[in-house]
Amino acid sequence: MDDDQIRSLVDSRNGTVKPAIYSDAQLYELELERVFGRTWLFLAHESQIPKPGDFFNTFMGEDPVLVVRQKDGSVQVMMNQCRHRGMKLCHADSGNTKAFTCPYHGWAYQVDGALQSVPLEKEAYRGKLDKSKWGLIKAPRVESYKGLIFANWDESAPDLVTYLGDMAWYLDGFLDRREGGTEVVGGVHKWMIDCNWKFAAEQFCSDQYHAPYTHASAIQVLAPTPQNKPDGSPLGDGQTERPAWANGLGGVQFAGKGHGSAFFFTENADANVWVGGEVSAYFRETYPEAEARLGKVRALRLAGHNTMFPTLSWLNGTQTLRVWHPRGPGRIEVWVFCIADKAAPPEVKEALKKSHARAFGPAGFLEQDDSENWIEVQKVLRGHKARQTDFCMQMGLGFEERREDGIPGITNGTFAETAARGFYQRWVDLMTGKSWNEIEAAGAAWEQEVIDA
Amino acid sequence: MLDELTRPLRVSADLQHEVEQFLYLEAALLDERRLREWLDLLADDIEYTLDTNSLAQFRDRRRGWAPPTTYIFHEDKYQLERRVARVETGQAWAEEPASRTRHFVTNVRVLAQADDELVVGCNYLVHRASKAHDHHSFIGTRRDTLRRIAAPDGGETFTIARRRLELDEFTLMSANVSIIL
Image 1 (cartoon, each protein chain N blue to C red):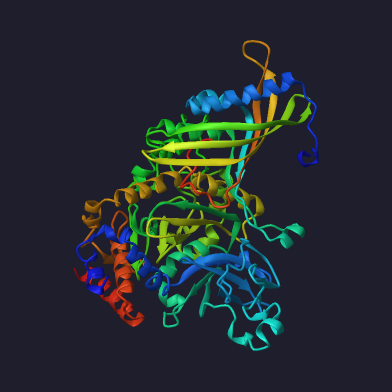
Image 2: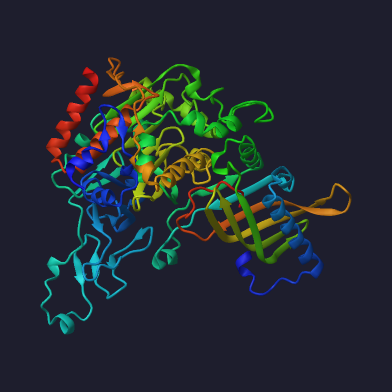
């Protein structure tokens, strides 16, 4: 597929996309190279690999990588693949090791990726193998942002903070509420969904619109009413009577550099947390510290949903952080982490782990409905006609603005598709093979254009 | 306690039969979508849990360290009742239209008896058919604590006081778990 054909699939100015972008196998192969081979990808939280030799086994796109803590405290990211015949070196989810030894022929690598030993080296290679040339392939760029470890294969990519742009402001609202930052609580939920990665990423980027209807059942059964709880009390002490979107206080959607975020304004520090009392009380009690660090809007934790382009998403309040690993054009592997303030007491972390699973684990009251939508859209896109028919992405088109109250970036009302349009604009710029300078310039031009429109 | 059992506990055929019939009844209530009647089989203080699995190196396991797990379910009776209520709204999209399920319970063993409680182990297979073409299986093992209580019509029956589910998958191959396992 040439660049003109790719450009014809997305019209971010007029708000349409061709659904072939979710189903075409050729485009998917290009995505692995031009999106996942060039962008900053979330890999692990620092708290998951505290000690030298600790590793976490994950993926960059479809490439398996090991994230490994080094003796000097730094982190290296290397392909989980032996240089001899390409075997996967390590199958454990995480652990601690002194070396990675290939199960196939026994080539052994140090934790920094250097090839340490080769079985029968003298007899088999007659001493002629230059081991210094056969270390593991490493990601050339590894950076952390407030506990989250990212890597990038592309040496020409902007640094992580530049890549984040205004999105860092929203990410701070999740990671920087309290002194000491955050940690991952418990293990990782992993499950498969038969849908394209962009459905999931775009929903968390931009789609506040789905929540009232998709999650109607959870709203009904979790609302604080006498029917729902014998004493009529809310699940959390500060749970709002109705979901935040029903309170009429408005909200904001943000778009920038392909990332997106959307939230509602509310007045309760623990509003809209459909979880147990400990979690709710914790957010209220720690509100003054969070407000001093972040200001009122972000301290209220109301950046409802967020995607950092391409595949890192999170929800404040239920504290879910997830990555949508692509697995072919029609499949993703979802990995979900529960994030807590490191300074939170153990009983709050335990309560958070439960409430997180209850809301957004694979059996979660809210999670269950989301996957069902994406799967069914994906099934329809097997049809020829369905793949050619434009999707409407025009919500809030022309109503973008820059605010003067400190909320940064291109914004719109929370029920809008500004962030989706920005997401696909970034996607098409990457997919047409622009250089990073051109991509950043094209993104800035799009942002200026939507403000001027 | 359970791991110490290296030969079958001697229980009467009557008790084995009674336990099996109770578990089969429970499975039938779930499969026939008589979910309110199923809730009646649960003790008010039930704890219903399912953890994730993780892959650990042998050397880490030997040192007693394994990657942390998290809950898929950690529910009390109130939360289980809310799950049933969610399906009853008619807007729980993963279960609308409702899937059909089939719960198979095998390898039933009474593992321990104390006072009015029994610990019962079994393997389970739950098949879920949903939408037009989707089939999913959930396979694992289970530890139930059954408590003897007075039956409403006189005599005795069981209530489920604790259920600890284990699922064999490391990565769930199903997009969601919208049914009761």
